[in-house]
Length: 249
Ligand SMILES: NC(=O)c1ccc[n+]([C@@H]2O[C@H](COP(=O)([O-])OP(=O)(O)OC[C@H]3O[C@@H](n4cnc5c(N)ncnc54)[C@H](O)[C@@H]3O)[C@@H](O)[C@H]2O)c1
Image 1 (spheres, helix red, strand yellow):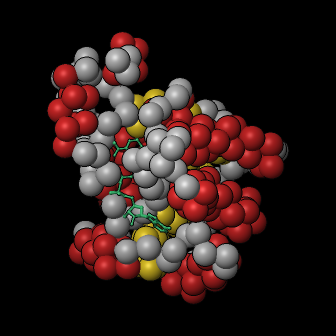
Image 2 (cartoon, rainbow, N blue to C red):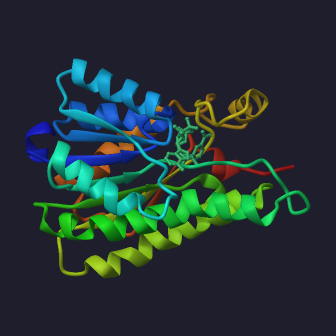
């Protein structure tokens, strides 16, 4: 696949975290230059350094994607370090384990800001680059929780909104080679998942195990490739089959 990706440049948010790092690595292995973006600058740098030692052109950007000027200043900084952007991969996300009674408005807004508003603003800022790319890609990380209700309403609602945003944004790229797709992982072995949930979900998954981030990154790599051009506006659930049998009780 690497030769089909040419001189593409990917921006990966959340690149210091579990799925973001796995995604940055696989896209680097496929021949893309990778901008590793994370609010945790040290973690973003760690991923960028790993990519560089593997021969990938990479740079780290310590950015809070919810800040007002984040998208436009990131665009400028990536242009300086790596060039025009062909792939925007919105992986950064937060989960607050709060229910109706204990979700205050600040917490609700923060979850929405990171999980939906930032992907919207980043797509807006990078849209011209994406349209000019040989084939542009926007890939969003939703969640299985966004495909139905979930006990933490802010998180579930934000991911449902991101799934809808994914389908809706393809209208803005009508007639171009840019596609917009999402992945919706089930339980994935990263710092976001608590250990008790990992045990519970392994037992409920037909493959007998929760996901490794690499399982999801592999699907993102397909969506990033030129050969995925017929796939647009979709959300792919990746959960080892758990949702087919799923019940919260
Ligand atoms: N782990 C799971 O079980 C699971 C399941 C479904 C979906 N997801 C989704 O996968 C994505 C990746 O999560 P993960 O599991 O790798 O967790 P993670 O916590 O390891 O990674 C999330 C990363 O996002 C970064 N981030 C958070 N807020 C940010 C901000 N304001 N600006 C920039 N970066 C910010 C964090 O620093 C972190 O590095 C998230 O969107 C998450 O919602 C995770």
